[in-house]
Each structure stands twice: as structure tokens, then as C-alpha cells.
Length: 268
Image 1 (spheres, helix red, strand yellow):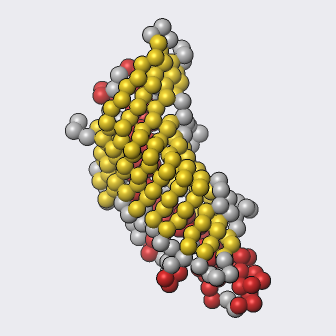
Image 2 (image 1 turned 90 degrees about the vertical axis):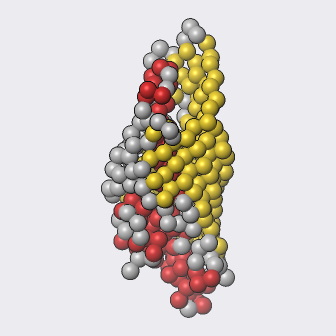
Image 3 (image 1 turned 90 degrees about the horizontal axis):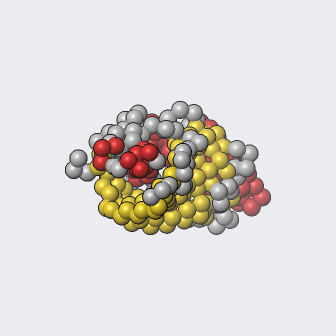
């Protein structure tokens, strides 16, 4: 049967767990081959086994997918690739640069490291209630974008994964504007990021804004999830000039696993 990280949790959790860990732990199936086979064909064997496991879970990676297994059998490297999923919240995961992992005792993966990852999620999160935001923020759909960020990063926190470090994580919903997270670290039930920056938001008439969150922390346990950070909004309004707003933002939901979860400002 599938490993625990693939078998436990709801469907979305299983799928995302299978993608990230399936990529990282791909070489383990090659451990039983002969020394000669390891020397001559361990990469091909590891790649074949990994692709088969992923496709068995409904995850299909492009032709670039390849796994290199160190001759010492304690390190693996996954080449840049893009993997798509049918159904569920997760639409695709793309490794923009090679991902590395060191295998621990009994072939376990204690930590994964990737320089750059792009994750595309299917739209689903509801926007934050608009009555707590100014007109400019509503016109620029800032509450909606914050709801998407909260849902995406909290979903990552909820996954049954080993520790994960990503230098740059790009999170996007469909074809909409994306958010870029830097210095991301995921531990069980928690994701931290030094900074998250949204692509510039624009509205008809020349209105625009740059939005970022620093010291971002997301936690998740079951259906309950929270996100905290320091929100910075720099808006440009024709005829009125530029305004800057800084505030602590705390978001919460009790329906993280719902098809269309609703997030709200803490205390409202």
C-alpha cells in the first residue's frame, strides 16, 4: 500500500503529500538492486519507479522528470519538472530548479530542500469580508488575494510531510496574479516565510497597489487554521497620490478542508 504520508488525511492532503514527497523520496525503490545495477542504471531505475508511483496516485509529470540516486544511496536529486493532477485543490507543482534530499535511517526523508518551486491551486477560497477594508482595497481585490494566500499557505502547513525548506515559492491560483514567498520553512503544522509579495494589483483608471506580508506564520490543525503577519499596502490613486498602510493582520478559518473555505479577520 502507499506510504503513510500518501494514505493519511483528506484527498487534497494525500495528493499534495504524494507530489512533494513522491518527488523527494523517489529513489528509495532502487535500494534493492544489485551493486552492478546501481553503478550502471540506478538513475533510470529510480526514475522509472518514481514515475510509476506518482502515476498510480493520479499525478503525471512531464518528460523532463528524472531522479538521480547517489552511489552511496543516501542522497537523491530530482530534476526540474512539472507535475499535474486531476481534480482536487492542487492543479500543478513545478520544480524550477533541482530538488535535493538526504536519506536518513531506513530510507526516511527528514528534510527536503528546493531552490525554487511553483505551485498552482485551483480557485476556491472565499475573499475576506469586505466591510473591514477601505474602498481602494476592495476595488483592487486585496481581500480576495489575501484569502487565496491564507488558503494556499495554510494548506501547505497542514500536509503530512517532513521538514521542507524552499528558497523561493511561487503560489498562483489559475491564471491570476501570483504571490512569491522567500525563505520558506515548513515544519509539521506550521509554515514560516520571511516575506510574501503579491504581483502588482491594478484596476481600471490607473489605480494600483503593491502588497506584501513580512514575518508570515501559518498554522493548521484539522479544519482550524490561522495566518499572522505584518501587512504592507502601498497604493497609488490617480488624483490623490500614493498612500501607505502598515498593520498586523490575523486571519482564521474553521473550514480549511472545505471545498470553498471562508477566512475572516481574527476577532470579527
